[in-house]
Image 1 (cartoon, protein in one colour):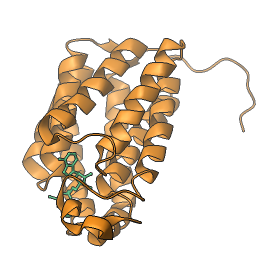
Image 2: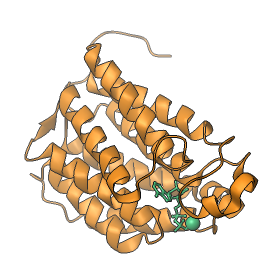
Image 3: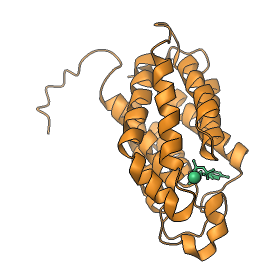
Image 4: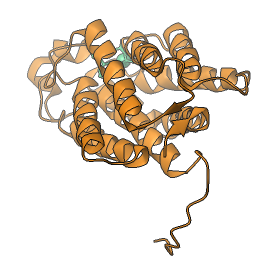
Length: 225
Ligand code: ADP
Ligand code: MG
């Protein structure tokens, strides 16, 4: 089932909730290998996004909402992650275009454009111990799931799982981009805060799709867990 503006709104509200919930964890991770502001940066940004979501037109497209998120993050987050995540949402918005609903292929296009935006802006590669270590496996898993015929919710679940594994994979790495790169071998043993937060944002996307905001109720008669 394709995902519409309702899913985007649920996703972004979920991002704000998960960032608030994990704020001190993200601060702690960034204190270990950065300057300790990552949780605050993102919490400030998504709090501002929430305030603006209430003013969104009822007939806004997914792309229009993603664009609003982008401009809000760029103007409020600060740090390295503000422009990077802002660019991700901006490029994702452009990929969504004027569509009112995103099918699996469109979702993969949005995620790919978002990842490519971060790369364009930050020039990081997989293994540099940045948010790209979450985004790129997520895009690859989403692409594979879509090619295997998965529905949007399952595509996003695959992306979220891969992003979580990708965030964990940053722990043994030496950083080659961002503040953590100044630490050399001292960054080893610490998870990259931006990879962790990106994994949380992608989990929120999957959870919002699972929440089934896109239309008719499930009628498969499954009894649940
Ligand atoms: P700052 O480093 O300016 O304090 P944040 O703490 O908000 O900004 O964000 C730090 C995160 O930004 C890092 O954990 C990393 O994931 C990400 N990051 C930093 N530089 C880059 C880059 N060049 N490319 C991709 N991600 C980056
Ligand atoms: Mg920081």
